[in-house]
Image (cartoon, rainbow over all chains, first blue to last red; front, side, top):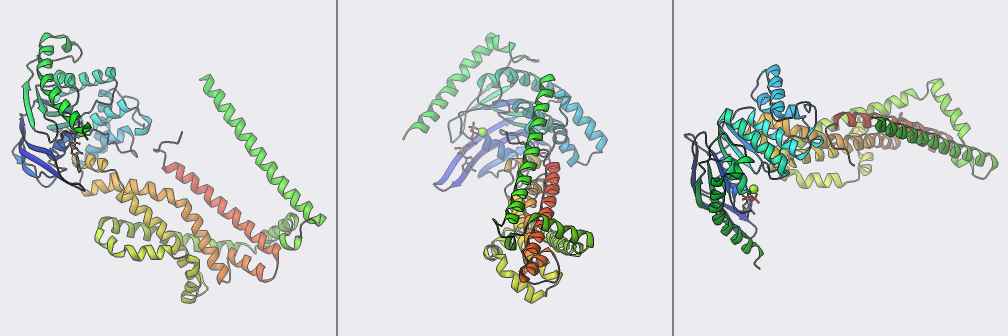
Length: 262
Length: 265
Ligand SMILES: Nc1ncnc2c1ncn2[C@@H]1O[C@H](COP(=O)(O)OP(=O)(O)OP(=O)(O)O)[C@@H](O)[C@H]1O
Ligand SMILES: [Mg+2]
């Protein structure tokens, strides 16, 4: 479970203090898939950074399970970064294996599990490729395997599929749902794309234009297992989309107006 | 498949043409030099001539005169290189991890690095004598800074995203060191290694030139003092072949260790 309580993040900048996130509270229950949507620059990545313990909060409190996040990365957490973060000097296999290598697992087991995970994300045969030899979508899949291989109970994902073309993205969304159905870890998923958020999640949280605050939160009572392509044709989906879009649109417009105002 | 083979064949023939062309160019220069010197167009007193140079060098190698000198230069360059690399890596690491130290020593390092090392060579010889040590010191003074800056930059300029990625998956400081920082530093160090080898040889030669009783630099200096341009040029030729061989082997090593890197298009 992720509990975010009245969290604020203020950055020191040359132009003075800048509040990226203000007084945000929400909760993701164990085993739930929750998406955060909000206009660009509203503080989504900042929020994930604080939850992952990479960025200390300026005010408020974050609790994972029953452990407060403070002074470091909490154990048992996975984070798929917005920009992919594969180590360029390691092969796909070595990258996927790294979390197990770090945990000191026997080399044979590590290798076998890494091979298996590469296969699961559709990259059998690419074990010895270096990141620069893979396409953007393939790199994302290697990142996904790297994050899932050690079975973290909390999974943070920052626009993992936004750089992909629609077809690949849909494939990977379905893949993610299938993998998640097996593991059932707690997922906090960030996206710009409201359709993606609804198709994947149990709940969608809308953030306001920066400094981000929680504007509203919508449960998504669509049945699972889901197919992200087919589910878009359901009437309920359209209804949810319209409802949430009204909120989101206001914030996107506010954000845009602010950014283009002189 | 077929087209790939065709590309391959085209590349091979291109390479062959280039090799033959280069050999012809070299031959033309040598012939022009020889004929020019014989015809009196250029003065062999200053530039010698290829046949005499060949004779001199053949004599050096056959008679065994040259080997102790090559060995002396190799020894100075290699020991200096080793000391400079190890020292540069260690100090680079210490400074990268202890910013206060790095801040403290920064001005000193900048001043030392800005000092022309040739100006230091006479000092090294006065302090350390005309033997091996003064040449090693000279080489170290050149190599150390290059490796130091590479190590420091390699450790400091690592993408924060990579560090966070490994931290989040449960990496300790040691894991970060092993999987992120050192590989990053290594790529920087490798990139500067070739330059270091060049500088190491230059350092050794300059040291020998300014005060020694052996080494390729000494041959050049001795030939000069005898007004024997033949000896000077033959010495330089030995040096050129020596450096080219070294550089070639390093290029090969570099390619082996940077196989993960994207080739420029
Ligand atoms: N280290 C920092 N120092 C100063 N300001 C920062 C820093 N990191 C982020 N910000 C600011 O905080 C705000 C939120 O950034 P953040 O990256 O969290 O946005 P985001 O919601 O993830 O946007 P996007 O959807 O475009 O990725 C931005 O205005 C950004 O400029
Ligand atoms: Mg972001």
